[in-house]
Amino acid sequence: MSVTLGMILEARERLKGVAQRTGLVQFKALSDDNTQVYLKTEDLQNTGSFKVRGAYIKIASLSAEERASGVIASSAGNHAQGVALAAKAFGCPATIVMPAGAPLSKVMATRELGANVVLHGTVYDDAYAKACSLQAETGATFIHPFNDPMVIAGQGTIGLEIMDDLPDVKTIVVPIGGGGLASGVAAAVKMLHPNVRVVGVQASGAAGMKASLEAGHVVSLDHAKTIADGIAVKQPGDLTFEICRKYVDEVVTVDDDEIAQAILFLMERGKMVAEGAGAAAVAAIMGRKFDTSGKVVAVISGGNIDVTMISRIIEKGLLRAGRVSKLRILMQDRPGQLELVSHIIGAGGANVMAVHHDRTDVDLDIRDAILEITMETQDRAHAGRIIEALREAGFKVMN
Image (cartoon, rainbow, N blue to C red; front, side, top):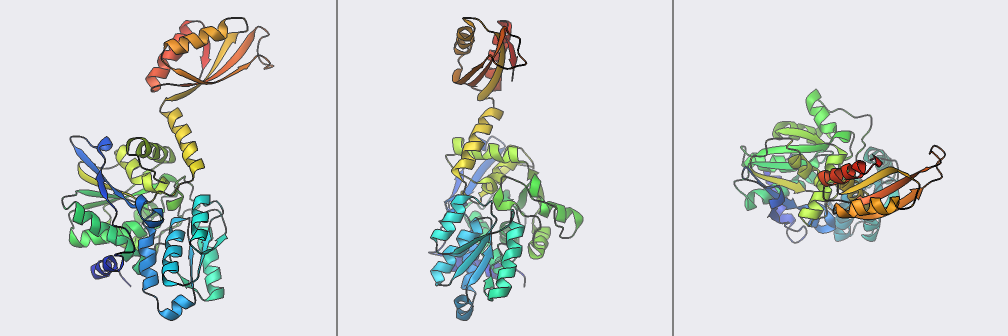
């Protein structure tokens, strides 16, 4: 069964009062004279991601008997919540298989929506295999997270909304895992506006769709490793592959460092919390991975991210940007040295966050000590000036 424009238009009508019509806001922090960036804020959607659209449309298409028998799904988290919410709306039981490493916030949210959660495997594909096994045992209807025409039609409603809100958009940038979102958006947009470009973005550690498009057929990766758990898929669907091959103009990749920087940038400059998959499109724009001229829309697909992950991303992001620096300073073990280091750092406009003084290292000369300092700076250049000042004062600085 293919996905038609009529299916997507019908899905839009069915979703009224169910899925929010999320906003399209200009992101001036990434815009300049050549590029105007807009964000499609699906992170503000019900359950915090776009997935409720496709899940609801699929369950709505089932018969009363099928709903009574229950539904089953596999998910890294967002599809789980979408299926759980839709199943609750229709009063049918739902079982969701999630990878054991799925963010705790997503697991808890899925259970709170009334679904039975089974944790299995380490990535989505492991959970998918387990869900298929359970489906064969129970006879419940499997709600595929991406390789299903009704699910794709539901996700395609995002494309319709973007075109309604910004008719002169030049490029729409969409994250790709299994391809449900990208194929839905691309189909909806291209069938109505064939001149609008659609660019897919994958994590470099899980670029199954890109590899498949380059090979000309669906391929399965040996592993999928990325902080963007929502797009950590080893193999795209055959249906989503065909639709993406037909309608997606280009697929680019971003690495985990770039995704982390985009999460931090969205948080700091856009006042928006995005998960890894949700920030992938912005990461591609920040890295100028494609022609970003004209009006560009980045789909922020979800905002369900663990606070522990946010903490790690903030810490590493500040270190990479040079806004936090960790120094190891070899100094003479005598009075006044620590005070001198503190004076140089303070005079340079930096702020000391943590200090550890060690004179017991067996590799040290008996007259030396190691001072480990974490300091807050403006950027790498600022940190570099302070390091140079310390070296000019005679200290050996290792960073």
